[in-house]
Amino acid sequence: MTATALDDGSAPGQAAARPGGMTAGQPRFDDVPLGEEWHSPLYAMACRQFARAADVLALEDEVRTRLLEPRRSLVCNFPVRMDSGEVVNYTGYRVQHTLAMGPTKGGLRYAPDLGFGECAALAMWMTWKCSLAGLPFGGAKGGVRCDPYTLSAGELERITRRYTAELLPVVGPDMDIPAPDMGTSEREMAWFYDTYSQSVGYSVPAVVTGKPVALGGTVGRHDATGLGVVFSIESAFEELGWSLPESRFVVQGFGNVGSVAARELHARGAKVVAVSDIRGAIANPHGLDIPAVLRWVAEHYYLEGFPDAEPVDGEAMLELDCDVLVPAAREEQITEHNAPRLRCKLVVEGANGPTTPAADRILAERGVVVVPDVLANSGGVIVSYFEWVQSHQKYSWQALEVQERLRTQMRSAYDRVRATATDLGVENRTAALASAITHVSEASKLRAIYP
Ligand code: NAD
Image 1 (cartoon, helix red, strand yellow):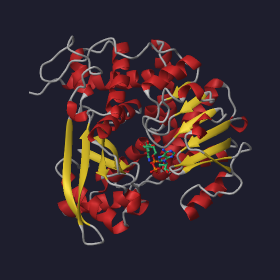
Image 2 (tube, rainbow, N blue to C red; image 1 turned 180 degrees about the vertical axis):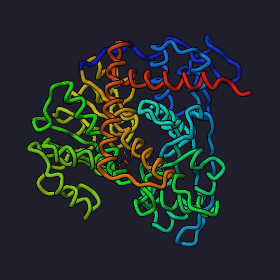
Image 3 (cartoon, rainbow, N blue to C red; image 1 turned 90 degrees about the horizontal axis):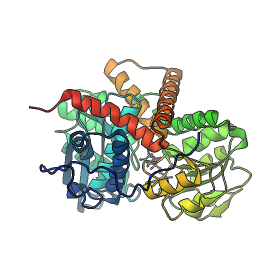
């Protein structure tokens, strides 16, 4: 597997059809943003990635338009009483990218800078991720603009319950099924499940995934995304002929995805030489004792102060000498500024959208291979799908079955991406998107236009 050079990528070769009756030949969306309401750097990035794959596929303008902008969205403002007695207004979002594939599926993010455009981008990526994994879902994303780290459990519960109530018209077990994302966990999913169930008068476990196992969640969901990242790494290593015990990893982000990926890599004999969280990084060129780091974080919450490691600046850690970089924190971490200085040979994206299109081009020119987010971090939604199936069936699977099915499904998605990359002569991200878009556009065309 080698990196395939990208074209200059600055402007997709074919203009997208535009809403309001505008068609190809009108200004492109990277000159004049499609749908001002979505406009954000992340949505522009998702559109550029889409356009490149759509160009490679020579996708018809009509289908482009339908797949570019979100199909349905909801923005809500709602009051919440804080512990102090003060009432604060919060803004919540839910964006459903396409309804062509079945119900929509995607996480709920709680973050202080969350915006509509970010949700739109993440919803679009969810569509490609579900399609690539062969799941019967379109993509969605949502959340609340808030800082979960400064709120009490009671405040978060009231925010979650009120936000769920606001979403009632657009969510449901066969309509739109949320899951955890940054800043939310199985605790919030339990509140979501309960609030929805209270509103309809009976328990509806299939309305949300990532629930606690005691409430009908699946075994293996918590670890699924990080484990899936490691399954992707194993597939890439097999193809490249590399060995895990002889390789050094840098993992950015030590939350749900990063900590599990680091733990599983360490368990397979790999050297994890640096990990980071929002406060900074720790590094040890001989390899960190990851089980000890996990115990430290369980006790101290942050990585800082961990003995047997050197503190490193959070941004500088991305440029440490290693074989594989696993960005598993946030979007837009690998940019045109640091891409020329990365010293890894492989990037495996645990986070959504961690690499900008400009950085993609630089990495491709430098021969750094990227296993893209829609493939590498799809373990979460794949096991969410298993949970949804179990909730509908009212039948629980065993841990081994969940893990083996995850491995099989991820392996087959990896093989599909690599085969498409070879067929089309493109790099992995465009191949992944092209494969996903082909499937979604086919479904979209078959369902045709209503009425
Ligand atoms: P999380 O909230 O559990 O953890 C995020 C981690 O990143 C924390 O350790 C935080 O301190 C750290 N972090 C935040 N900003 C940082 C920065 N600038 N530099 C370094 N570290 C930083 O979130 P998560 O669920 O692990 O999600 C991480 C990424 O993976 C997100 O992009 C998310 O969309 C994506 N993702 C998550 C899942 C899932 O199942 N949780 C599935 C697919 C994709």
